[in-house]
Image (cartoon, rainbow, N blue to C red; front, side, top):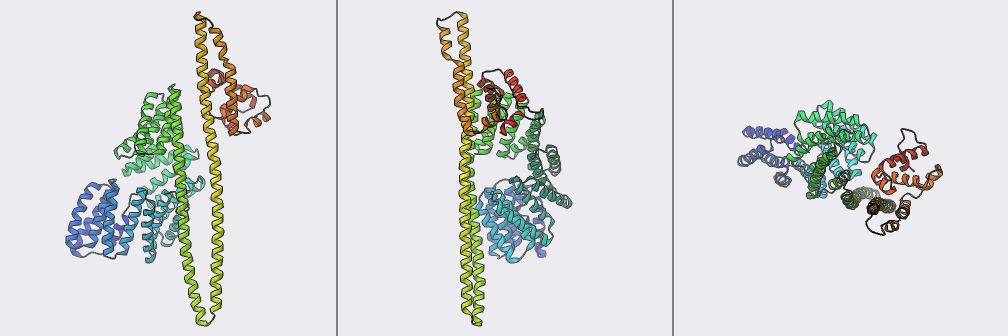
Length: 604
């Protein structure tokens, strides 16, 4: 939100001043120009300006001085003070009965509440601004406001309502010829398509926005849309195109000196380098992003950058440094209660510990990751319920407004019929219309209830399936650890027997019945596996009837994406044995060189 109160500044410049207040006008203009680049000094000068404006009785200087202090606090990341000064400015504008300035301030307060994550307060402020501009029929101001509201609704995951406001913005921009806000609205629509995985639509809309930004020479807009384009290309696996977008955006923000933009592009480039197997470059980019995040400070990016740095270090075989980095990422995420970042970090920590040969700790980290995953799922469900409630309340409010408007129209009709003496026909028309509206409302409510019930059932089934999958993974890991323990015990007994120590050692070794124990464990694992992949073995044996029992076991384990070491432990074979078994299985399945074994098995 680089221009939280630019509306007030535009209005201020468009308002005439008396010659006696000319110096105050010039100072306000200069302070607005510097509010982004030098918020500390602007804050001090705005305080002095406020005193002089009140002494001179200059309303415009006073309201702008208050807004300037709010703007400076925003860039200093002091949102409480930011909100405080904008509310003071609103009081001044209300006493002056200045509707336009009130609308500007309501817009800024809506953006501030949005930064706090205060959905209801944010939407309330935006609605008040919307009501004023609609009453004034100011299409130019409605363009920017609709874009702001769409962005806030997107942040609160109210995607349908967000799309409506972005479309309204496009219509207003087309009416008044505002190309810049037209591009903002297109970019917002592209982001919504990206969230909904409509990637091709997202690319088309975002690229249109990029062309407009370039034509207008809007560097900040270009950087933002290039970042979004890069994310979409990365999601599609088109890494080279994603890299070009990131590098172009990084160059724009480096020239502009915008640290937050540089941080975002550096982090995205680091993630991309790791994905393409270039951890040295990934480490350099993410370290740059971390340095900026530390200076702001921004905990979310700090945790994310440290997580990605750990991945780079792991690929560079610097395991101890990787563990230190991921532990720092977890500590930051836990301290700031960033559950999603903490969940991602625990997964990376499990990978690092597994690579260090510490399977028990790796399993503990994995379990912590799964616990956080479940917590996030529960939180997302609550947010989804909250979102549906908001959508429902909005629809109800719009339906009420529409109903009141319809009632008003019918009242006018009724009076007209009364004047010409046809009272009965007017009453009949009202009854019929109300009955139709009631019937349609009930039908919509019934349909909505059915859809919600169906969604609930689908989610319940998905949760059951996820639970079974987690149990299956834990059984596999437990089986691997158990087999490792039995093998180790058998080796120790064999050493004792060879050394001649202890009578009856051979008899004890025989009682372990290692192979029989593995068979029993495998039978238990097969039952659990069949619950999640009911038709896996049937389809595999139907298509490849010559597979042996051991090959069926190997196929099941490969479909779970287990590591070769874990598969070897479960099947009691060496890593080399696993490779040979994989080769024999590929031949029996008749796979071509370019076909992956795991994707083929996962697709059954």
